Amino acid sequence: MGISTDRTCRQLRSTMLGLACIAAVGCTPINRFHGFTPSEAELSEVQVGQTTRGAVVEAFGPPTSQGALQNDKFYYVSSQFRYVGAFAPQEVKREVLAISFTPQGVVSNIARYGLEDGNVVTLDRRVTDDGINDVTFIGQLLGSFGRIDAGALLGDEPDS
Image (cartoon, rainbow, N blue to C red):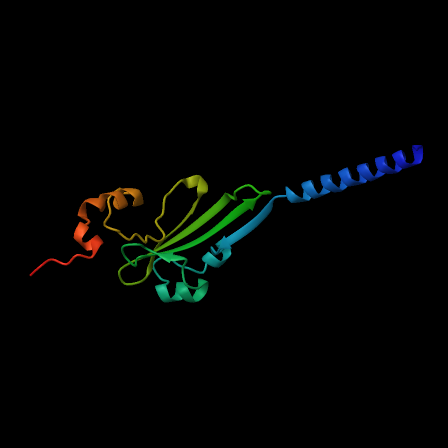
């Protein structure tokens, strides 16, 4: 009986070691990178007051987004997200490169922002007004009961 107990103990240890390895691998952080921002070396080719909008697009490709109200800014955005196990991803780094243009289409300013700067930049605003002000589905359903015609439900047609 001592041999089978020893074998069971070894199998239990091996199983526990395997589960510990799986748990350790499952909780390893995974970094994912999204978007593109030009590096400082690439950005050195852009001269304020000289480079045109077309030259910027040719050098870096189309921007991630353009200015929401006017077409006077290009935004290049990159982000780094960290995934750990089954937890929600956490954004650990964001870089926004804003290139402003004059009305003639020449670069007027270059600014770089990060998460630590705390600047809110509206990259894309797509809002559709549904015409319903704070009314839930149940509220809409209950609100329609007063407008039901009993004759229409019973199939009666009014006499003409």
